[in-house]
Length: 313
Image 1 (tube, helix red, strand yellow):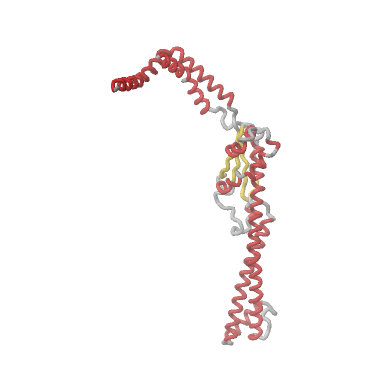
Image 2 (tube, rainbow, N blue to C red):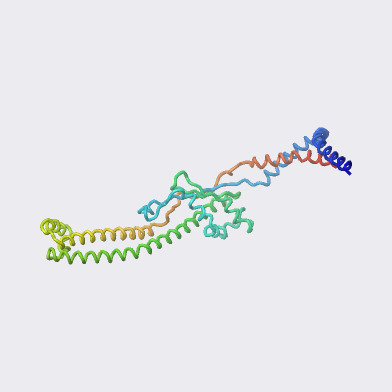
């Protein structure tokens, strides 16, 4: 039993040992016909790739941040790394589904397969930074040079619409968040004004707002030097509170008006340059694919010769 086992192991090791020799001898024996056949096959493989692989084109739509849109940086900030931050929105179904559903793009090669077109449009779409944070580049790549620019422009247009919708939601949210503090600030100003008027009448004997705020403050300054009492201290405190409440109300109201003004200024992004029909493909020759196909085709005759020799043995 052990003899049979040892013989089997010996046969296996011998077979493994003869493989390199078999490959070398086979190549040497069939080199005369395999080499020219390999060269012809490699040429044929490269030409087949050239015919089958269509050249691809790129078109880029350039968007720019609308600085007129931002009256105050604390209302809406255009932010940094816009390209990275906006990729999820640009790649979202809300933007791309409308482009895919457009009848004018039915003939676009990357949209031809209904099951793969959603994956293809995301694979061929590139969002990048245009050298500065102000510029956003939307680039699309396809084999149809006449449609690639239209697709890039359509994606950019749908994105700007969706961005505008999000901006409007943010504006409405800001307005809503400001209304209650503004109403409360208005009530605080009215209460502080009423208290200040009542105390001023006791100290001055008249309404401090009757002849203007500047003259009242001047009178308060002179009276404050002569009268030392509880009523004067209370009046000074009431005046300070009125000024603080008025300042807060003015700030909140100015912020609310800034948000309202922003809504009428359009989108936070505007088109700097429309995508144009490209004049030449990205690569004139698909060299990498052609080289790979040529290498694989070159070794086919040698692989066939090795397979035949191994079966004979």
